[in-house]
Length: 356
Image (tube, rainbow, N blue to C red; front, side, top):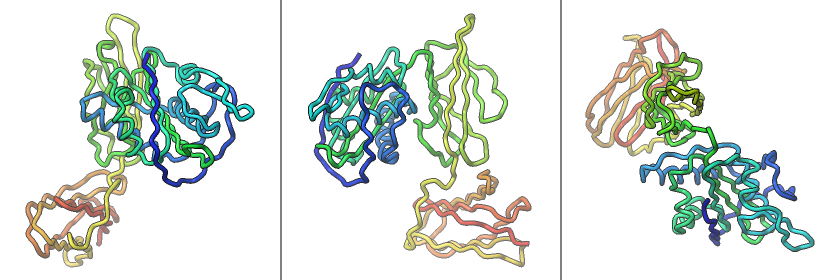
């Protein structure tokens, strides 16, 4: 069991006031605290897994039970105006001890061999909060500990409390739970090619995987790091895992979900970088693409169906400064396509209409 460390980062950024229906007594684990700002929480989580990736430490899997545990404690600290790992109620203006840290966490999360917690307060900025934890050896150790497999994060705001902004991170392992993690538990991918991390090293001999509603693949020797290809259509994609130990009845199953969106994160082009336009070419029953570059660079043109399936890749090679013109004919009789124009310094998405 780890030592618990406290940290206060005295910064302040305004954010919407949270609802304050106070918790009393120790948690019973059925509480589902309101999400105050999921973007801030996700930012912190991705920073934690980013640190682990840079160190070659396996990724944490974010789980709902742990999120509820962390959000509960962040809210309790903010509403009762205290800062401590243990739980308190405010009675007649005074703090009254209610229950210990891991008694409270255990109500939400049935931990077995590993449990840890970081708390922080005083800022809503994920970067500032993470800097404070990184610069505190005990908090940093909790974040990079390879013995922790799962994670929860909670953020809360109460303008009437001393520090206003409250954070809680939980780390742990559950008995007989072996997470499958896609792309360091990212929420979205722009490509079907992903990396899987499978917990179970030294426990299981064989594994098998499948996409969504597909049939199971063949059993194969267990390996923790796997290159995997998602099914072709865009949307939420599920990867399922089964594990077994030969000669015994020991087995486990797990899954993870990631959104496949080829357009996620693309930024608008700067007019100084490139100009493009699409128009029909009635003489060739095709679409005419005009591309004006302000600097020489490699250019690739990709065609996708509306379902997100990559159909054609046109590698145009190194193009010089100036105007370039291409005739593009989609190979299948479908009226609307998605055209992605990829340069070394830009990405642009356009709808491409098949003209007849």
